[in-house]
Image (cartoon, rainbow, N blue to C red; front, side, top):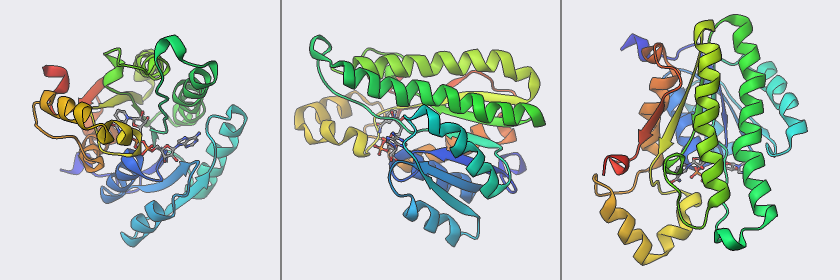
Length: 250
Ligand code: NAD
């Protein structure tokens, strides 16, 4: 199991205050990594849980949709833990409104966080990794990387884009020691999906379509994140790994 060991590795995880980002940050720490958590909301709970394991954990409060903050966030994170070996680009939002009435504000808010900030964080941290000739980047995609969804055109566009960025960077960086891959989560119980869970009919219809017969939990993201962050996945580049209870197989 040594190839899954992350002892001595340093991870930057965005959107790690709760939901999938928190679980992945904790999963990486359980495998041995030190972690800087970044989010627009507090990451105290995430940091406390990781420190309890005896790992180093720090957090930075930042609105990552503000492009001008990104360089500062990355250099602050490097200053806190000495470098970044693993980047998990997880922070993301969704805005629900029919395509015919989707506002410019909703469109731009979603694209600027889910796509613009994700790319520029890949670039900033990627350059740091390329200098050392090693690193692992994990971008968080979605089932809407493959499907159109309903009432979420901006989100769908952003998540299709996440797969494109992942493949484009993999082509350029695979030969230089930096692996860029993505995870496409299926339907997971978090704040992001709370409105669908609250809609009894929609919740039932989705659950019935999942071969595993249940929604995912944030903890379901831990193993896949550790795998893509570790040397166990050294020959994987530009891959989008579905963690979806079989949704895409149906
Ligand atoms: P969540 O709403 O529970 O958590 C989102 C995280 O992003 C929080 O830590 C929040 O503080 C942070 N965040 C939001 N806006 C930010 C900003 N402007 N700057 C910095 N941080 C910001 O969501 P989640 O369900 O855990 O989703 C995490 C990722 O997984 C997202 O990219 C989402 O699109 C993706 N995803 C989720 C599901 C699901 O079913 N929950 C499915 C597919 C993909």
